[in-house]
Image (cartoon, rainbow, N blue to C red):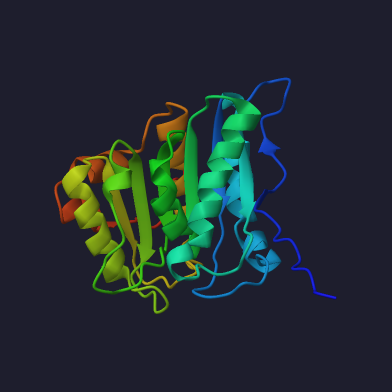
Length: 248
């Protein structure tokens, strides 16, 4: 008797955090966790847990604006070459947001491989903004595309001491993106590594500032405004100041 292949589980959205049916959803954040270069195992619960502080922070800050946040649970734990599974799952998640909530603006917030997925999926019609934290952008003769970023607001933040994902590669990526889209900025988190652990409050505050500013019409902070307006390399090597976001 021939064996039957088990069905592949699809990507899923984690539970909604933030706006509810009573207040109504007027904007959505899709949070994309880290992944691996190659793996066909199911998405990692540990990676999902690592981005929950972002979800809670954004949902709480955007509560009065009807902001809802979801984490994507990937089909597979790996990027898997040309399959780019996390990017496919990010695009599916944007479709699902539209199905659930209608025509609301979406921000993709990704970390590590999730940041690469967010950048790849930015061309989805619902996407208004992208936040890429410590993006995994591998070197190679064919650099990742940037044309899908046209018309989007894009923030990249990267630790200068990241030994897992070369920050110089995210700078080069941002420089290419800036040529086709003026609404691109990049912040350098000095003396921080891949996990952005040493300056986590500042990174979370920066993510909140950019997300609410681009989705919910909150005023952007002066450093973000300056970074968007400054020509390369200044606006793409903007230092994230210690204490950013305090007192706002």
